[in-house]
Amino acid sequence: MNDSYHHFIPKIPIGKWVEAFINFIVNHFEPFFTGIANGITHFVSFLVTLFSSINPFIFIIIVAAIAFWRSGWGVAIFSLVGLWLIFNLGYWEHALQSIALVLTAVIISIIIGVPLGVWVGLNNKARQIITPFLDFMQTMPAFVYLIPTIFLFGTGMAPGVVSTVVFAMPPTIRLAGLGIRQVPEDLIEASNAFGSTTWQKLFKVQLPLSLPTIMAGINQSIMLALSMVVIASMVGAPGLGADVNLAVQQLRIDIGAESGLAIVIIAIVLDRISQNTRKKK
Image 1: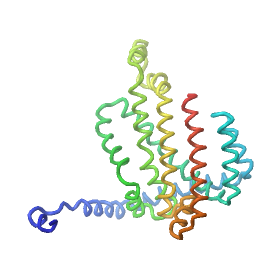
Image 2 (image 1 turned 120 degrees about the vertical axis):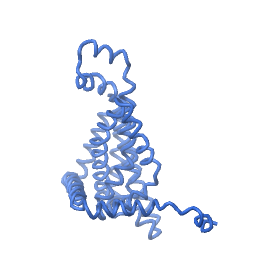
Image 3 (image 1 turned 90 degrees about the vertical axis):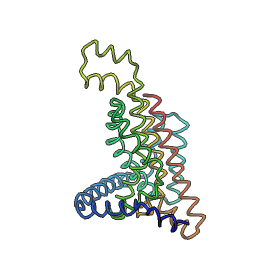
Image 4 (image 1 turned 45 degrees about the vertical axis):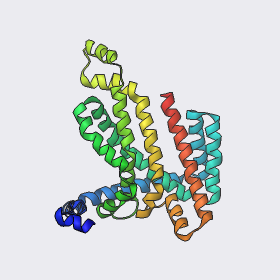
């Protein structure tokens, strides 16, 4: 059926075009992407070394104290018990690697996503151009991102972080733009009446008022980044995702249950802390 159809109308070689584009990028910009991969790898290694240098029990108490400060006793006790359970099960080192991966991806998402979101919120033309790309990034299956990132960044932590950034960044951009657009018009007019410059209006009116919405976007990015931990392990990213991947390959229910539980505990702790930070803002 398809062969007879393509006899009259040739198949559009989209896949070949994308492959040629990736090969062109790799052949002409390899040093650039190698530099980015090295930078990401060194930053994640720095975070892992920093976290590992802290005694596990002190680390757990610090996280519990932050949870108490931002969310109260309930989340603090859950953080204390949950992180101790991860340590007790023997997944502490891998948990720190996963936290470092997520933090790196979220930091990059904020650095790129918030300015883009502000631009989208202030400029309708920018919103019309960027929104289709955000739709593409959120609807394309996450596994597909892994293929070009392997060619561009090799294997290991760097392609895992880049794939996670692509998947997790759209909510930060969308909600930052939404927050800017939701600032009441009368406040914008009042700031104009007082002779505020564009930058003064942005930093003293629009960004402070849109901060709760921006934090909601960052919270969503954190959750999406955690959901990529297992997928990132397929390109060699270490951490709890690698344990889940190993459990699937070897049909080890025990490893799968324990590492999956560790990911859920980290997700709940990060979600509750960032969620209540947004509300308090």
